[in-house]
Length: 224
Ligand code: AP5
Ligand code: ZN
Image (tube, rainbow, N blue to C red):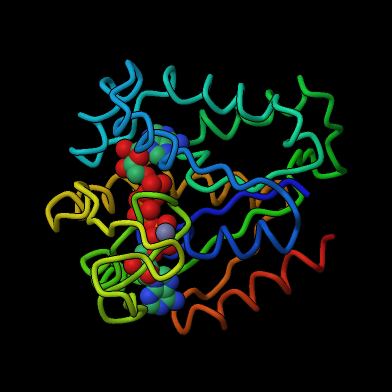
């Protein structure tokens, strides 16, 4: 199954991505995680991407699209994938359709190359609360905690693997506000793009993590 998760920063895309991808048996591909891994390794891509992440701006399409094209050409993505954080604007959405066409995917009746796009809907106040308390594991970007909502029982270490927990440099309040503006101006238009293709499902993403996982899995199972 080919699936995209969309939603504002802090909506819970990363948290839900791991559950949904393992339910479907497809790889989880997060452009944000790819950029952060490159930044921490100091690669040329990481050096270029860092200034955009730290400012809350989108990394330019010419850097982003090739990464996704390469990743989707790998054998493990041939049977499907879950994209978290891509596409981020209409140009990226159009490019994704082209990549899938080039990879031999046939569009469905509504001209959709994806099976489903889940739009995680949550208000800005909740987003700010979620992001300001977020802690991530240095070993695995899928190990996500929150100081109030899902604290690590091991204190400043990851419950799952013992890795060090850290706060993202773009999780400062002023950068989060910028990311929300960028989301509204540049990313929200892809919701209409996918609605017109007939693949959009909106998920109410306020509430407990496991309840939202159940809603998401029910939605993907309907199209499986
Ligand atoms: P990216 O890494 O994609 O960040 P984002 O979209 O801003 O989303 P977040 O990772 O902040 O939030 P999330 O929705 O995954 O929430 P999470 O599950 O962690 O992008 C970062 C940057 O990279 C961009 O600003 C841009 O510069 C660049 N970039 C990435 N992709 C790009 C692209 N395609 N093009 C150009 N640039 C790109 O949850 C948040 C917190 O809430 C956690 O603490 C979690 O424990 C908690 N939580 C989750 N669910 C719940 C719940 N139900 N109840 C209570 N707490 C919850
Ligand atoms: Zn961990």
